[in-house]
Amino acid sequence: MNDTTHARTPVARADTDTPTSPLDGMLPASLNNEDGMSTIEYAMGSIAAAALAAVLYTVITGGDVVDAIRGIILDALNSGPGA
Image (cartoon, rainbow, N blue to C red; front, side, top):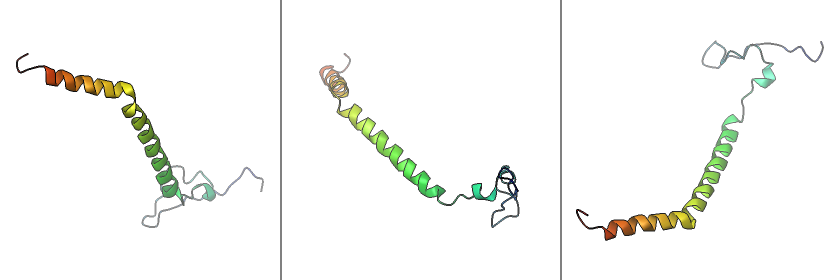
């Protein structure tokens, strides 16, 4: 058997007798293994959340944002009712 041929056996879920995706019958069994997927997805989500938090912190603590918020508050306080 040469290296380009693989066994094409559909992998069924434990609770059903049907393949889990259309590619199950076309991929070798070793590529259908999804062990550890939730762990890597959780890690990537955590990294993305930390990166977003860092960007937001940088934007919020920057002088432009603070000055804009201060200007909005001062305008609101200085304008009287009906002005």
